[in-house]
Image 1: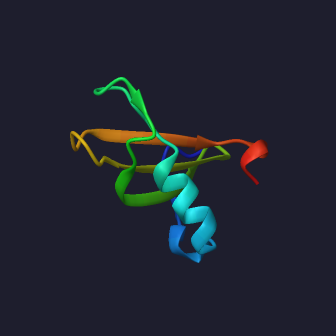
Image 2: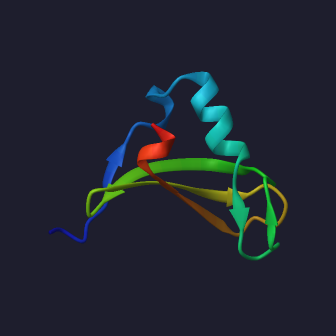
Length: 71
């Protein structure tokens, strides 16, 4: 299995999906839920889809792992 992330098109998602994924976040730095993210980047690694961005409050990296429940 490759250790290289495969980029995906986050903006191909519906506006509703994008809004949910950009709002429903957890920031490890702020230790708070739903602060939101900016600069989303979607990719797949080892068969798992991730959306990574920066916390709207502190600017630190936030990472969302999408599960089957998200689709």
